[in-house]
Amino acid sequence: MDRTELISQIAEKSKLDFERVAIQVFHYQYQHNAIYRSWVDNLQVVPSEVTTLNYIPFLPISAFKSHKLHCELKEEMVIFTSSGTSGSTPSSHYVFDLDLYLQNAQRIFESFYGPVKEYCFLALLPSYLERSGSSLIAMVDHFIQQSEYKESGFYLYNHDELKSTLEHCKRQSIPTVLFGVSFALLDFIEEHALSFPELLIIETGGMKGRKKEITRQQLHDQISNGFGVDQVHSEYGMTELFSQAYSKGDGVFYVGSTMHVVVKEITDPLTIAKNGATGIVNVIDLANIDSCAFIETQDLGRSYADGSFEILGRMDVSEIRGCNLMVGEDAL
Image 1 (cartoon, rainbow, N blue to C red):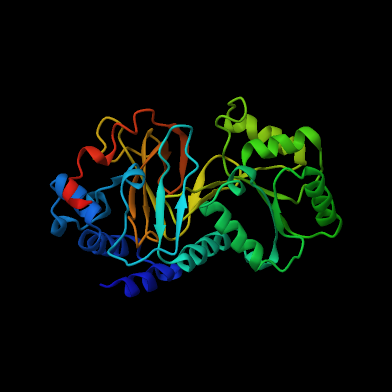
Image 2 (image 1 turned 180 degrees about the horizontal axis):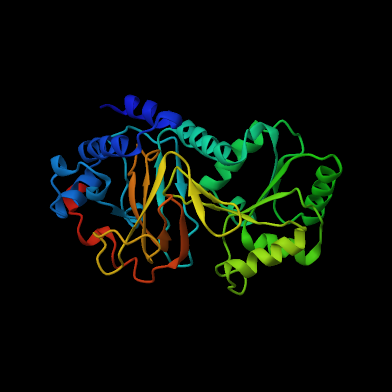
């Protein structure tokens, strides 16, 4: 099956047979992605024997730091890059079809929250705005452009202006979504207190190195109190993924039709962990049709029978487990 046919199937969210399409994507990427093919071969996996999700190999996410992952495509439109930490190598996701990313992100959001155009989108994402190549900024900017409300927009450190816009949206009963990086939301409520119970806050992470580390529950409690909301929602996304998952306040994430999470045992990353057991989070993202759809992340988490999952933390040894150790130079 070729790329066009696969994309058509991936977009048919109501008819998606996930396992069938995932196996088709596996065979497509084994044929067209030299880095992934080398990884599969090094694991001595026989492609013809991959007939269920359980047999699909996952590529360590560090491959996005060391290799240009793509399926024999000509020239990328844009490169999404991770922020990284001081001294670390950022990940690079070469994007050959930006519309595929944006439309997929919109479909996922709308499957949880309804039509994008019916919301006012406010974005308090300073650390993302201050660098180039953020996939989150691209997604939120797309939502802002689709919104029917002129009040939609980005904010850096102009907290007074953001407060004024939030109060206006509350007075006018405008359905409002505030995307915010964690430290910036805390900075805002140190200066301003609001009571906007109808506000939908979606925090996107981003505390490391900016403020004292606190638990997710402590973070959400502070944000809830500061904005006067009952729940704080969360988005799980990353540079290396085209799809997102959302939590509506309980720390449990739910996925859209293009994404599936498989948790593997820490001591044996080829074995699937039992539901509720802690392990390594692996993500199947069918929208990653042009790079790699099967990624072993650096996250620790738990998955559940209904397809939901939790994120518990990060693996410290993830760099050691990277694909550089096994992918031959002939695949570069």
